[in-house]
Amino acid sequence: MLTVLDHLPDALLDLDAHQLYDRLSGPTLIHLSGRRDPALFVSVLLHGNEVTGWQAIQRLLSRYTQRELPRSLSLFIGNVQAASQGQRRLDGQPDYNRIWGPGSTPEHAMAQAVIQQMQQRGVFASIDIHNNTGTNPHYACVNHLDAPSLHLAGLFGRTVLYFTKPEGVQSMAFGHFCPAVTLECGKPDHPHGTQHAYEFLEACLHLSGIPQRPVLSQDIDLFHSVAIVKIPDQVSFSFGDAETLQSNGGSQAHICFPPDLDHLNFQEIPPHTRIGWTNNGFHLDVQNEQGQDVADRFFYAQDGEIRTAVPLMPGMLTLNSRIIRQDCLCYLMERYPWVS
Image 1 (tube, one colour):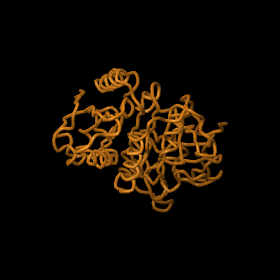
Image 2 (cartoon, one colour):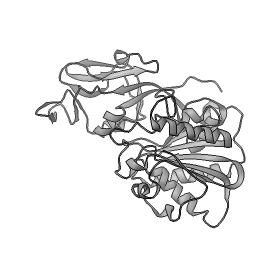
Image 3 (cartoon, rainbow, N blue to C red):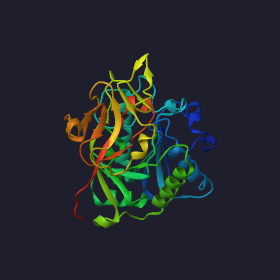
């Protein structure tokens, strides 16, 4: 499934994300030489509807068409087939940001080929660029708490999220052999997300090294993802209010959320905050990092309302029903108790 190139195909930078499938036909790894080695690894379009990474690469590489890159760059362009249809992934495809661990699909084998090639070549740092579908601030994610990864994340912004679930993500795999971060750059139609990602990539290309010293706790706001919230397949949901529960197949939805639910992202909300309404008890699936059911720890249902049981901070809440079904409703986060 993998095409490997040592040059940019002609006029590739002129193409929008939805046009790449016509030129590349599948996942592509492109090695570009620069003044310094090893290369900076950048992955884009692991989710086909998250186009900010590709737009940032277009802006970055357009600056270097007639001059040498400050550092070698290895660019992985992921799910161009889904990008051609503006979808996170197509039906029948695995999630391209869940294939970087053990698995038996052709996509897992392709990801292992990328990992093996980059381990052999050496990697300065790994950057995976994503978007959100809900209202979120820009933030960086790490899967390993090594100092270089935290320094790299802090270069993007103060807000840093540490998570170990879900497994199989690109940054987790690369974090075993180089500093690795995931950038969350807001919604894909926001130009400042592209600008932020571009400026970060430009800065990384000019780094001679990444500090090894510990990151000071006052320099970043570090959060830990402690649980993932999903809606079971058999549970219907809608967005509205208690009085105007939207119908689903002629009957009321099991759960209804406020139409501005995603405005709670990265807000530290107190106990007993209402986040929705339920017609027939409680139907959210909440699992911690060990895969245990912890719904009762975080939420309760009372008088037809779903409320928070403890102080918590949600992240990546979305109003996109397809994304909720393909991935999750949100993650729950807590401040990470760390000592620098």
